[in-house]
Each structure stands twice: as C-alpha cells, then as structure tokens.
Length: 153
Image 1 (cartoon, rainbow, N blue to C red):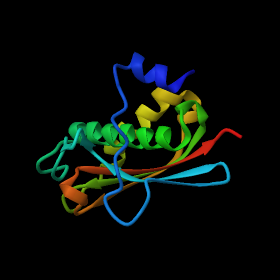
Image 2 (image 1 turned 30 degrees about the horizontal axis):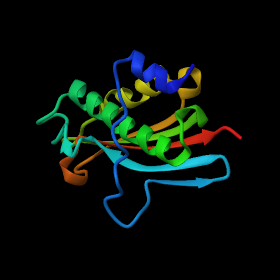
Image 3 (image 1 turned 60 degrees about the vertical axis):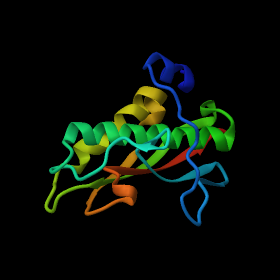
C-alpha cells in the first residue's frame, strides 16, 4: 500500500511541513527511528480547532483536530525522508487533548489520529499510544500529537 496514494484515495493532501515554533527541530533520526516533534492543528497558517474538548469542542471535532495534527506530522516525515514509503511502521503516538478538568474521553479524541494512521499505513499504522487530557496547548490548539516511526533500512 502506497501511503501517499492512500491519502489521495481518502481525499486528503499533505500540507506544507510546519516549521518549528521554537528551539527545536521537527524531526530527529537515530538509527531507523524517526522521532517527530509534537504538531498542532495548524493548517495553511490558521488554527483549525481552538479550545477545550467539553467546552468549545466536542469529542468529534477534537478527533478531527487530531487528524489534522497527523497530516502535519506526515508532512514533516516526508520532508525528512523524501517519501512516506520510507515508513516501515508507526511505533508510538502520544496524544494530548486540551480538555476541561476531569475529562476522561481522551482516547476517543486521539482515535482521530490513530484511525487515520491505520487508514494510511494499514497494519503498519497500528501503534502503542498514550492519550492524555491537559489544561492547555500551544496557540490554544485542541490537540497535539507526537509520533515515532520506524523507517525502512
């Protein structure tokens, strides 16, 4: 399965890779692992989802926000290694959900990220994961996603 063709079949396109917003780089490769910095739901210079799940956002809109975070991460992966075909598997996803106090449905929100990765990479998109509610994210983003992928040798 060609991941970039699969994205097109899903009607999705990769945005330009987002630039680092601080004193870090978007990706770091060590051996066959590519560590990707957290990405937020910034698309074409605009935030797509701002605010907390349980207040301004719903679980469904939060999941869409997480999907946009993944598209940004995939753009960074492609920029780092030239093609999404270089991904052997998704290793782990750390998902952060800007949510109201006591919010317990972070896994349902981060499913937006996980489901897209499986749609794009098939079984190689299945991964370990954390889904954590927090009381704030950069630029008021509803979600932030951090991913580690294994690259082909």
